[in-house]
Image 1 (cartoon, rainbow, N blue to C red):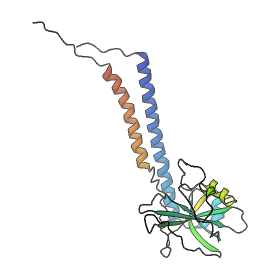
Image 2: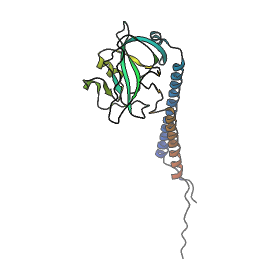
Image 3: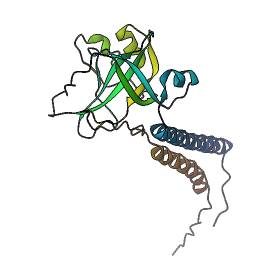
Image 4: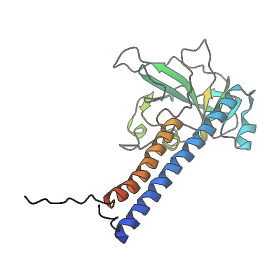
Length: 244
């Protein structure tokens, strides 16, 4: 059996670079999982906390706060998000802007989920109250927009309610012609409402468990490149030729 073959310098360098890169990607995925688990804990705590004044929560800059607020709906300016994370039956998440007394900014309110009545039917939201309303919910970051394809779909629509597969607050603000608060108000559950209010801040597209799975994958790649280097340069069994 022959001895170990000495690897070339470039193969060692390439293996080390790849192993370090894969390890770094694995650590990054673990960090992302930890961040999202922290957000989930903050969201769960906000849901059970006593509601506080909306203006006070905004001044404090809390990303998750259980708040109460008064205002008037812009009932004819409804937005339907066609890809809510908890949509298993098919349906839309309804959003409507709320005007606050003496405030130029609008607060976008997540009314809840409306299931489809048929495979090709867009749910029709019921009329909203026209007077001042008192609302209670969690003030939280809007759902992520992901990779938006096709540009601003809201600007191309002329009829209400408008539908979109991405909720981009900047696009909504341009569409309304008024500034928006940087987060949305997800209303508390109400048995009397037609809306299903399961505001699952659960990162269904990329939950913490999936980040950990990707981390395991990257760590596996890091080990694999080292194993490949060892296997390629391992001692080879010599073959003796017997002449007859």
